[in-house]
Image 1 (cartoon, rainbow, N blue to C red):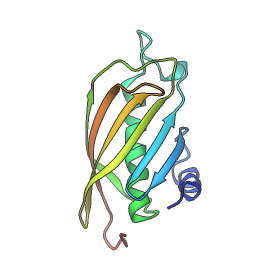
Image 2: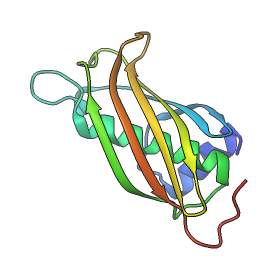
Image 3: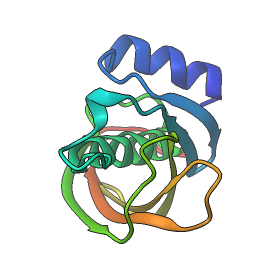
Image 4: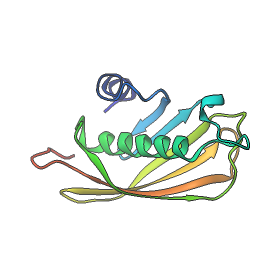
Length: 137
């Protein structure tokens, strides 16, 4: 799927996601989540749920870039390691890529970092279930 097709798909199927799809390639995505006060937890750091949502959507986009617009691809396993405090004054970037694709399961990883920074703030490995009878590339 192209970036434009992915944005259109997300607007229709996942309208609650308000981040930006920056890049989409075959089995890779780069997403950007602008940060405001609604994303912060006490202490002024970006909340875990904000990071987890961004990572989950980034991997979903990477998977769909490979298999096409399959709305019912769902997360079955999600492990996140919080490594460093993200900057609250910058957007959070998510780089997602696929590690292994089977007939029914896809495993991928996501690196999260503050925009403009090299230091990874969180690392995710997750598994998605692909519905049966789905054409995969």
